[in-house]
Amino acid sequence: MKMKKLLSIAATGVLSLGLLAACSSSSDNTSSNGGNEGSDTDSEKAVSLRLAHNQPEDHPIHTSLMEFSKLSEENSDGNVKIEVYPNGQLGQERDVIELVKSGTLDMAKVSAGALEAFDENFTIFSLPYVFQSQEHYYNVMDNSEVVKEIFEGTRDDGFVGIGWYDSGQRSIYTVDKKVESPADMSGLKIRVQESPTSISMIEAMGGAPTPMSFGEVYTSLQQGVLDGAENNETALTNNKHGEVSKAYTYTEHQYVPDVLIISTKVLDSLSEDQMKAIQDAATASSESHKDVWAKAVEESITASEEMGVTFYTIDKQAFIDAAAPLHEQYKAKSEDNQKFFDDFQSYIK
Ligand code: GCU
Image 1 (cartoon, helix red, strand yellow):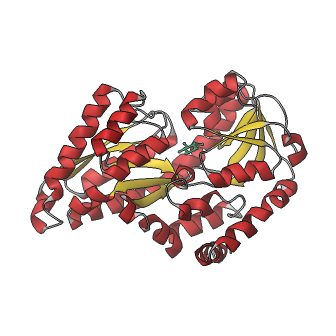
Image 2 (image 1 turned 135 degrees about the vertical axis):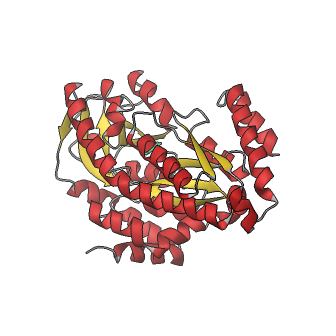
């Protein structure tokens, strides 16, 4: 079944043959640890894990994942090696989540937005304006038991979230049209993540949502398939969207974190020491990433302006009002949702 899935992905051209080999050696490696069930002896046995993500090597998340890899190795005295595969080489976010779920790939960094399609509990991270400020966002992500519950909640589905990385605030940008109010969004085809909440959000804000994987956005903007997209500022520079989108409006509608996921199969095969080394590395690199991120955003703004992008600061209230019904719908859906929402709100200072 696992192989069938992998082959079907390969057949669609997402994975190259070389990477198929990389993936299968990963599962060999996983199964070679599999029998030890976390006994003391296997803490001496080195493991080599593969971690995939979709950003280029000059992107701040790559820097922080390399730091995570380095710290994992240091913390474990060389017993945990993590090889980072950037650039979506192993697939787009949906694909790598599938691979991690099946144990074919060990780890991945994906957006919480992409995880929503795999587990509804991730919805809350994409609710527009659920975080009131960066301080609120950091407080929730670093301290909330609910976040831990959501990250752990997918264990039986094949993966667990072991850390998060700041991916900034998301705002609307278009090829050329300045968007000041929801009325300006009318008829605009705006790319969103493959997240039901983000689809509803753009609808509520008056636009025409177009879900697609991140890797397709540049060409779609260039060819006029899209009128715009929404993301943090690094999309303009590191992903070059600023070459084909010149108007960035600070709607600041979401803070959607990046999440570090690990396959349950791998998790069950690691010793406690190895797991602790990885967990500590995830926490430390998440913390240092905050500065890496802030610096990268500043640089992106300057570089985007040099590319001819204009940044517009607006009164966001009309967007906040337009998105408000999504909060009510979310809370009314289940008791868990209400609990998650209240928990998040309790971190507003
Ligand atoms: C952010 C996020 C990525 C994600 C992208 C997207 O850049 O960090 O992980 O793929 O948004 O919009 O799909």
